[in-house]
Amino acid sequence: MAILSDKDILAGMESGYLGISDYHERGLTPNGYDLRIAEISVRGDPEIKKEGTVRIPPRTMFYVSTIERVRMPVDCCAQLWMRTTWIRKGCIGAFGKIDAGFEGTLTLGAYNATDDVVEIPIGERFCQMIFETLTTASDKDYSVRSGHYQGQTGVTLEPKKK
Image (cartoon, rainbow, N blue to C red; front, side):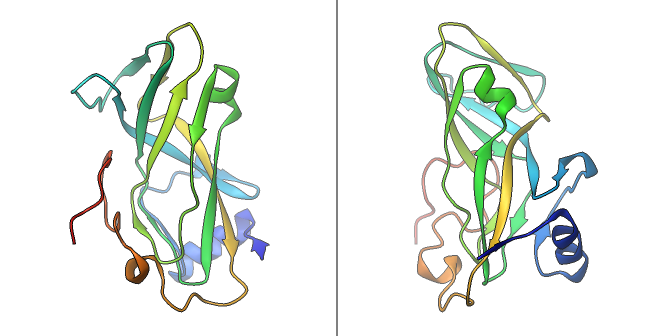
């Protein structure tokens, strides 16, 4: 396994090896890419917020969808790490890996673990995506193995029906 550098990420996008739609130069890090917030769904509030600054109540779960759509090759996956900006404000995240072959926006679960409101602006960077190459290409990528969230857009809490 190897982690892609900023140079590798740019070369991968240029060649079409991997995809990051709505790429923003500020998101590129030495060993990853920071994903930005398109919308936020706060548990208990039926309205999905798509603009402005969202106030996350204390001790409340919320879900973030990314602006960027990612397209993963069959021999690459990615780790997701919450930016320390949000950790320092008391948020914790429940992130998984982005599977080889996945394509779509990402839905990320997070929790305001403090007794204070946390304000999160739409469009702000929320988590870092770290690309890892697999030792060999997957036999069956995400789209074949499960694909429940393949092609998703926006906050998606339930898998697609097959």
